[in-house]
Length: 316
Image 1 (cartoon, rainbow, N blue to C red):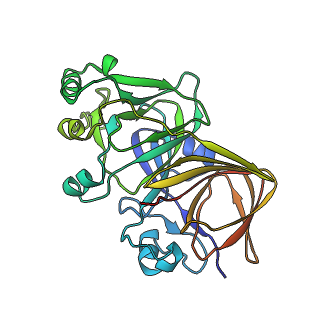
Image 2: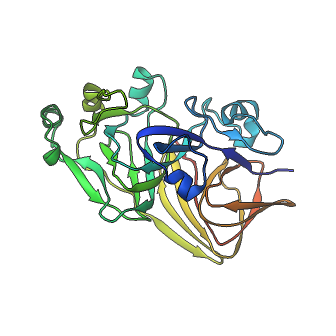
Image 3: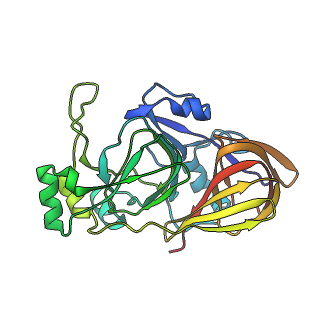
């Protein structure tokens, strides 16, 4: 019987992390400085493991290699996407990610284009999204002189907001924000500025100024324009679509039957609880669950109320 692949996430402690991944989603976290839940991941720095079914105990990386038919027999050797939930109890570093070409040459892995769905945000919360420098020379001068007030673009955010963050975008997630991030499967980050804070050993964290100046885009980033479609029992919003991924917000209020139109789908339940019916199997789904609907699942039914962020690979 074809069935969904439910995954066990991997937690990562961060200097800026908190405890809301436990409070909001019920995850077992290693400490009150847990910043990242790698929910659907085949990256070697945090591989999700299949929780149940015939592939129980197998890492997503191995499954992708050994059972390619589950993923539509892809041409790529590396599982291309990574889904995270981030708890920013403090500001993340101001950072930038390289594109595929630069990352492969210098880091030996994919570049990192990503996007953020804001799950929650404290009153007055902000992100950094882009910069004001008009040339690469001006960018370098402002970074090396530490003129952050004039360089960085701050944007207020609230729950339900969405931001597309292509490689080359200087950015940071602010204090008091939780996001669901869909990204390329990469762990390459170049720090531009870290607020002069020190780690547990009293050391400043490493910065990557020359790499950051190399890869940063000049000009303000262009966010995507979401498109919403309402059908009986469900509201579907296409948040972004590009060569790397397409990301949707699905809000199921009653019952909706769907069919597979992508090679496979990555699904994260961000609110509510309901049921997923595949063939003759019925699976309870609730806030904090993450699963893949593989290529072998051709049709399914959701019964709400349940709210999800769903993604699939883009078309290059």
